[in-house]
Length: 318
Image (cartoon, rainbow, N blue to C red; front, side, top):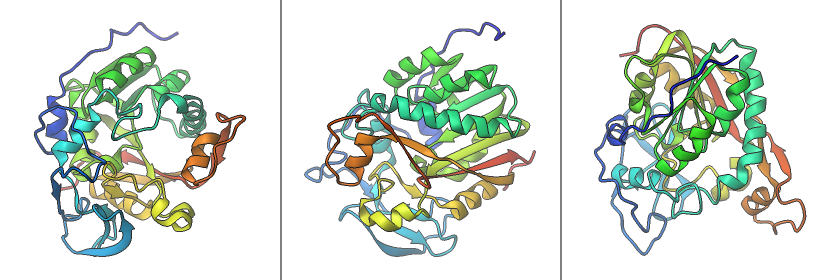
């Protein structure tokens, strides 16, 4: 039987900016995806290795450009939206429901996301993930809800207060902010960040801080849209992973492993991550007419997501 847990906690969002590397005046900016406005853009070096030797590609939308690092071969966005403007969008109440940035509707994907997470959790369970789970960027808490059968303690972080309110139904504690919103001294056997790392401006620093919340030998699972998949080759500029300006790094298996190794994680293992999507969403992404019947039918697509599991080595890379 699961022990009673204290109620969920609301922590101010000031730590989010610290984690992401910039201060932010929290307000919902307009025009993030509107070319009639001109929010601040910035050029940047590679977010993973910090080398400023970009190779240009054919991907972009005329305002944002996808480049590839000439050193570590990671794909990333440059120019990109300035971090403070992007952080403000994540904290908006409409980010998950048809806002200027974010999702068409996260709620409409609940059935598909829960099915995806059940498969993923069964695969993780075979690897001995322990009893205490932290999810970074938990959205509405669907993964945490499905994790109830696998973990005794389930905690999440979420930047958007509106989403955190929903997620509190499914977890022991939800903290508003980034990983630094979790109380110091908290330790977890398993930490997951599912479709989060592609949003992170300083991913090496992010992972080093995340490891401070792991027990010795604990596990971290990262998942992101797979830049190395046949979907990107097939769809080109229409690949859904090119979600501008939110996605600032585009990982394949090689670059995601490289990031985790650079941050000091060991025992890296690629995890299969089949993903279910509502039929209507699949049709929209492929430019097809939406179906008149069974729009919520789960369609399982391979190779949309790359996931890598790593374990704490006990020391952080310098």
